[in-house]
Image 1 (cartoon, rainbow, N blue to C red):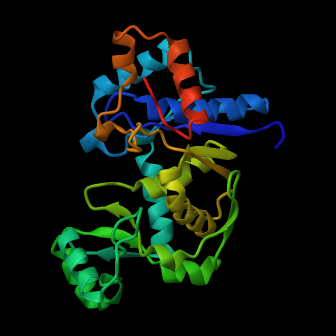
Image 2 (cartoon, rainbow, N blue to C red):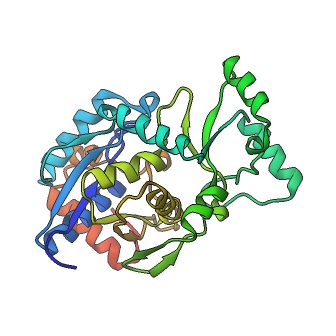
Length: 290
C-alpha cells in the first residue's frame, strides 16, 4: 500500500453507537493514518423506517467525545436517492434486473420444498421463481400495483463478468461466483435501494481504496464485487476484522444489548479507557471485557 489510501466509517444511525461501531471506526482510521491517507465518514440512513434524528446527533456527540475525527465532507445516503435510481435504471437497461412478487413466507416455502438449506449469512437463497414469469404476467402485475422488489439476475451477471477476483488483506485473493448467492434484492417498491447497491456506488463515489469492516460482511463482499463488475466500478481492497464477543462467545451488537458509547460515558469511562478496552479485546481474539 502507498500514499493515497482512502478508508471510510459508515454507520447507520438506527440506534446509539456501540463498541462494535467504535472498533470499525478505529480500524478504518488507523489504516488510513498508517499510510498517510484519509478516512471518510458516511451516514448510511437509506432505511428511513429505522432512523431516528436523535441517534444521529448522539453519534456525532460520541465521536467528538472519543476525539475521533474524519476527513472531508460527510456523505449522507438520503441525499443520493437520484443517484441510486439512475444506477438501477442502468441495470434494468442491461437486462440484469427483474421484478419479484414473492413474499418472504412464499420464498421460505419454496426453498423448503426444494430441500435447500439457508445461506449462513445472507438468509434463504431465492430460487428464481419470478425470473421465469412470462412478460405479459409481469406487465399485468406491475400495472396492478402488486408489491414487488427488484432482484439482480445473477446468472446473467455471471455471463457478463464471469467469476471476478478481489483481495482481502487478511485472507488473500478471493473469487466470487455470482450464482452461489442467489438473485439478491437491490430495491423495493417502497425502498429506493438496498445496502448492496448503495455501498458499492458510494464507495466508488468517495474514492475508497480500502474497506475495513466486520467479518460478518465477508459473504456480502462477494456480491459487492459482482456489482462492481457489472457497473464498471473500481475495486477496493478489503479487510474483514474480527467481531467483538462477550466471555461466552456471543457477538456484541445493538440487538444483543451491547454497551453503547453513551452508556460508557455515563458510567464514568474516559475515551482512553474505552479505546484501551478495545485494544485489549483484539489481543484476546475479540473478547471484550468491561
